[in-house]
Image (cartoon, rainbow, N blue to C red; front, side):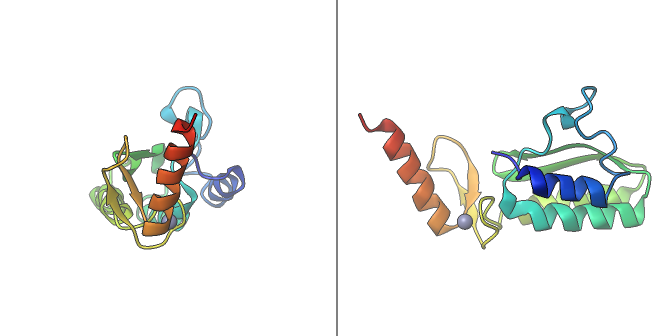
Length: 132
Ligand SMILES: [Zn+2]
């Protein structure tokens, strides 16, 4: 799962300084942003607040980890780091697929934050994949 390429490009264009290592082989950004479109607004808002506090901050990783958003940055600004931690908390109440209110789901083979609808779809995908 990943943010749609066009949404990713939008973020990189909007925050070129923060995402200056985007797709750089040297960091985890080599794989782009590996979280769902539902978190796009949250990622964007987090980026905006971080850049406002520290224009020199650099993002090392933006990905989904154990159902939460892992927004990893290098910064000297303690407040900016806290914003990233809060974004992880907030992401656990936002469906990663569609952005609707969601909650942590642990009944699939992996942990995801989804709304009821997307959870149903995920179960269906699993069932379809297991059908002979
Ligand atoms: Zn959803």
